[in-house]
Amino acid sequence: MNDKIQILITMVLYMSIVIGIGVYFYKRAQKSSENYFLGGRTLGPWVAAMSAEASDMSGWLLMGLPGVAYWCGLADAFWTAIGLAIGTYVNWLIVAKRLRNYSAISGNAITIPDFFSNRFHEKKKIILGISAVFILVFFTVYAASCFVTCGKLFSTLFGFDYHWMMIIGAVFVIAYTLIGGFLAESVSDFMQAIVMIGALIVMVIVGVINAGGFGAVIENAKDIPGFFSLNYIASPEVGENGMQIVENGAPLFGPASSYGVLTMFSMLAWGLGYFGVPQVLLRFMAIRKPEEIKRSRRIATVWVVISLSVAVFIGILGRYLMPVNDVLLSKGGAENVFIELATGYLPPIIAGVIMAGILAATISSSDSYLLIAASSVSKNIYEGIIKKDKKVDDKKVMWLSRIVLVVIAIIGMIIAWDENSVIFSLVSFAWAGFGATFGPIMLFSLFWKRTTRQGAIAGMISGAVSVFVWKMALNPIGGIFGIYELLPAFIISCIAIVVASLLSKEPSDEIKAEFENAKAGITE
Image 1 (tube, one colour):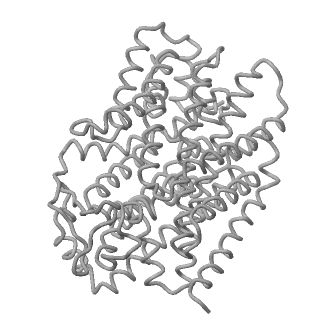
Image 2 (image 1 turned 135 degrees about the vertical axis):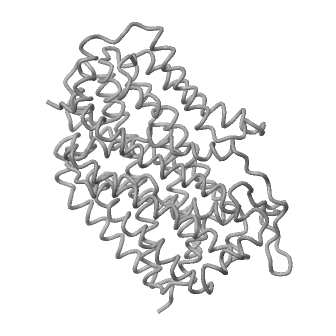
Image 3 (image 1 turned 60 degrees about the vertical axis):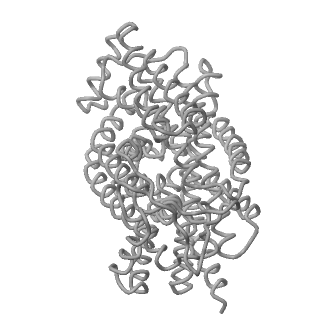
């Protein structure tokens, strides 16, 4: 049987299991909007930990990060991975339990905008509206990155048209999200987490054997200027068409570029994003028992450290095994290095499982993004603002969610239409948006009793606006402005929260008492 047919059959069988998970949880998801959007706060420690990381990493871990390492070497990918590993641990350590308790006592919040609005006892739902809008904006970009992954996967594997594959992937995501809700995507994400880490480890073992050992891979990396360095970065020489130039069967690199301390801190700042990404924070809110968070933290941290390390090494490995692969000769094409290695060096059935893992991880992550974005409109804007003084039929809320979900997916497809889109770039922008918009106010809401509603509004708006301004206006200037937009935007948001809170009236005694209850772990 043709290798590609075997891969396709394996992928179809794997995706059938994923669909089965959605169908299994269908009835439970449709019982109420709380079940649909938060799973009734029933996640165990393993599912909470693994699904949080898989929904966060998605196809980016298997395509975006190895692609960065393959294209320009160790530095960018390494410092990003270190920042993410630290951010994962600290987020589980200081945020998870406090948010689980606080969200339960502040009106039983089931979305992030709900929590912020309830935390400050809003009557006029300004925080609710602002946070819902920004969730909508940044998750649409996130969904687009997942659709790009689907399109690239199938066009690279089977030679199918990118645009049709991207559309089919998006339609599948929509259908799956409509069926299963939060529980289905959490359980499927748990399965994806296992497949992802297994796929990475298997690929490294097989790749190293074919390379003749770690030593050969490392020596090859050291021979490329700046490629195997933490304070320099490799500079592929590209032609006018954006493709790396190849001479005498070898890819050309220019002199290594300096990778300064400021840039290192800029990449480490990826870890700050964890404090504001809803797909992870919602897992904290959905955990069955606060006492189980410690175990979840250990599971999540181990998974992240192993997965990130191996993903970065796969990019280095790819430079040795496939230095002049036609698919990998552009910055965007380099993100296919994991696919090319898997299909080139693994048996078709194993490669099929791994490819299905990429697809399923991407789909289960994008349905998480769409679900949260849809909830921001139906639960927060429609039910929380437009109909705030009226009793709203829960079924209407869920139907509106489905309509919004389809609209968001269509916009995501439009953003993903360019087949040269770089997954890493799309994800980095959305990650910065969430990190700067919600990260600072999440930390201040949980740990500073003096934080006020005015401070929350100032922090969210300044953080989000700073991401756009820095990315689109200042970043192209270069120099100090060339750093990752999350770092300056996060700092600006923190300053805005402190200044606005100190200039406004202190929170009420009721809000302060609620804060102390959350701090003490009182949830009744």
